[in-house]
Amino acid sequence: MALTLLATTHRVAPGLLTWRAWDALRSAAAVRLRDGHPLLPALRDAGIVPETVAEPDANRLVADARDADVVWVAAPEGDEALMREVGTLVVNDPLDVEVLHGSYDLPGARLLDLVSVMDTLRRECPWDRKQTHTTLVPYLLEEAYEVLDTIESGDLGALREELGDVLMQVAFHSVVAAERDDETAFTIDDVAGAIVEKLVRRHPHVFGDVTVSGADEVNANWEQIKAAERAAKSGAEASALDGVPMGQPALSLAAQLQRRAARMEAPADLADDLADAAGNDVGTRLFALVREAAERGADPEAELRAVSRVFRDRVRAWERRRQRA
Image (cartoon, rainbow, N blue to C red; front, side):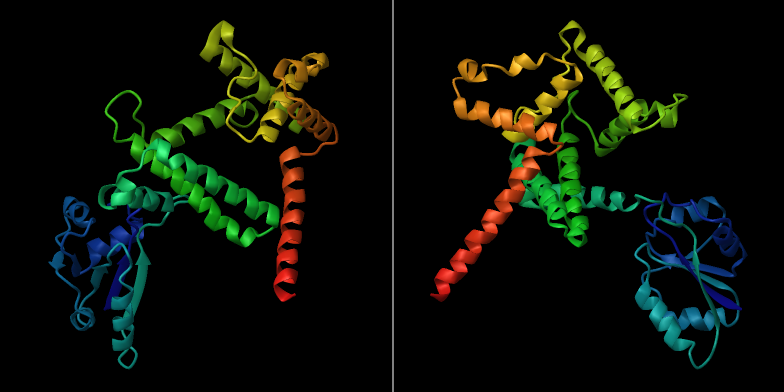
């Protein structure tokens, strides 16, 4: 005789159980679970008639399992307290107790929890409920910069948390968008589906029959595919500069524009006399420095941030010395 504690995950559709789990359920003398358990309809559909209880009684489960095989279907969160009680009861009077995992999380399954939490927050939290795409923009930028700062500082231990903050912003925008009732509405599944389609489309050497010799050829194919996408979207008005976000920091904007122009083999003299056209000598010199950084294989944003961090540290050290004086 034995007691089987059947563990399942709520991140898998109820009823999608392993063969061992179904075999244990069908062969048991008694199957018990809480009222309202998500697996209850699937059990009944399979012809299994379980006993439902408000809360499990560890003493009764152990006592009954000494006479016949009993399966307890654990709550989705695991029923750890019940398992500890059962363990205490069988220490001095042994019983065959097995924890059987009837379903398992797939990679990415915890994203379902994020979607559920964001849905709940949107409904029940006054602050979350009033947010819009516009009001969320500062938080998205802030979280992205915190990821950048974490990587540049080498604090990879904190990277997981910072990436989670960015992921939360994606989920937040998606739940806001899902509330609309026009053609602009979308869900987080639409967001994921769109990026999956784009990645597959832009990697024909992985998902198609294209052969490449190395990373340089991958980049060349990528640019050709993006050009075709721009042409399909904008027609004759399509430009290689389409999609460059003009709201990004100025140094990174200048670098991206220059990279795009270089890929098109645009004439170098397009950058001549920018001061006269823009009426901005300082901006022209900065633009030239961005080109110089590119020629050296450096990222102007990263270079300036590195110098800025040194300056920050010097100012802080000066503050400490002044306080001690």
